[in-house]
Each structure stands twice: as structure tokens, then as C-alpha cells.
Length: 153
Length: 181
Picture 1 (tube, rainbow over the protein chains, first blue to last red):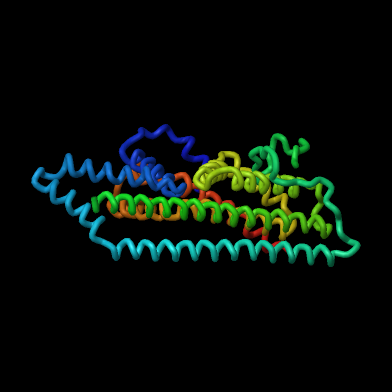
Picture 2: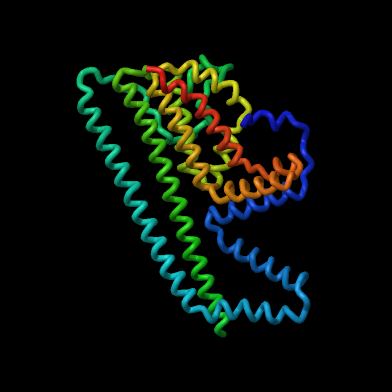
């Protein structure tokens, strides 16, 4: 996909589909960052909205009653959630262990490789780490400033 | 009273879910930080082995880029990283400059590092937005089947989705370079 093309097109009028896209992006943003409570609050608002605006008055009591029935009468649901939560923690910790073990093994391999480079080894003069302020740097050379020295850490 | 207790339990469950998502995000950030570290070390090992000069622009540019990505992964939240890197890879400069970079890199291993760097960034963006992208693709497919206007189909294209396509196309541009011995 050519990224430069959309910017050349005339501006598109912001419509319902754009709003739907941005709204869903916002919801996913909340979920991805673990902000469950606002999402839950929004869900309650949507339910409340449906109840108030869409349902006939005679059904409102039934819907609210059903909602609380689900919450109060499902001990099996609560136990399932507990089990699922424990499984999720187990997977998380095992994943964490694997990630750190792989990193340790990788560093051990590098150390081993450095030991065996022998006298041909070239030492790196400038230490470049990700500490400090990192300017946005492109993998591709800046054609205008290609010869300028770079301020690296 | 029972309803109140149920709501309290529900709130507690949501809190546990919140903790798990936070830990999972932290772990994902760590995983990708380590992947970028590995790429930077592979590049440094090429210098240590005398196959790449430290003052060559390939080394300096690629290390700077990797450091920018590491710094982003270290400092920003996962969703913010996705936004930043998606914007970064959708920048207008890249399209013409891919060709320049492809011609400048002579070493197969350096080209492989660049390809792996793009793969890592692709995975990072995809990892955070997988469900969102999948949902948008389903909707896009549905709209196409319904012969909806092109403007409507384009309206639902999300930034991560476009960034992934761009990264993949840039990655493909480097694939022929990997065959050079």
C-alpha cells in the first residue's frame, strides 16, 4: 500500500463510518490498556439507553430483573471466571519465564561468540544505547542530511 | 443485597482482568524490547567480526533506528507505541527511500537484520491490534460483498492496518537482497 497516496487525495468528509471506525478504535484502545471499568460503564450506559429508548415500558422490569438474575444466580459462572483467571495467570508467568530464559541464553551465546572471535575482533568505539532522548530516526537515510554526523549515544 | 454483592464480585473480577491485561502488556513490551536488543547485538557482532565498519552509515542509521524503537517500547504504553510506530512507518518519505537503502546495503546479513527489524515492528503492531484489524477486515469484506461505495470501504481502514501493509511491502522490497552472496 502506498502511504503517500491518501494525503494527495482531497479531504474526505467525516461521516458515520469514520465515526464508527474512530469509536471502535477508542474502545480497543481502552481494552488494550486494561481500562476495563470505562468500557464496563459504557456497556451499562448502552444497556440503559436501550432500555429507556427502545424497549416498551412493560419489558423494562423484565430486562432489569433478568440482568440481576444472571449476576446473582450464577455461582458456576463465578467459579468458571476464577478458574479462567488462574489459568491466565499461569500462562502469563510461564510466558514470562520463557522470555527471560531465552534472553539469558541469547546473551550467553553472544558471550561465547565473542570469546571465539580471537585476535581479529574489532572493538566498537562509541557505545550506542537507547538511554537518553531518542530522536525519531528512520531506517532509511535522510537524503538531504546523509553526510551530516549523527548524534548517537 | 444479593445484587449488591454480585456487583461487588463483578467489580473485583474486572479489577483482576485489569491487572492481567496490564501485566500482559508489560510482558509484551519486554518481549519486543529483547527482540530489538537481539537485532542491535547482531549488528554489533558484525562490526566486532570486522564485516561492517562502525562509522558506516548502515551501522549508524540502523542502530539509531533500533534505539528509537527500543526507547519507544521502554517509555510508551503499548497502544501509544502502536500509534507512534504506525505513523512512523506511514511517513511520506519512506516510499522513495526504500529503494535507496536497498541499493546501499551490500551485505546479506545486514539486509537480513533490516528485514527482521521490519518483521519485529510488524509483529509489535499486529500483536496489539490483532482483534481490531481482524474485525475491520471482516467489515471491509462484508462491505465489498455488498458492493458498498469505495469511499465507505476506505473509511474503515485503520491506521495499524495501513501501517502493516506498508511495512510488509517495504519488507518485500528487501527480499531480493537476501539472495545476494
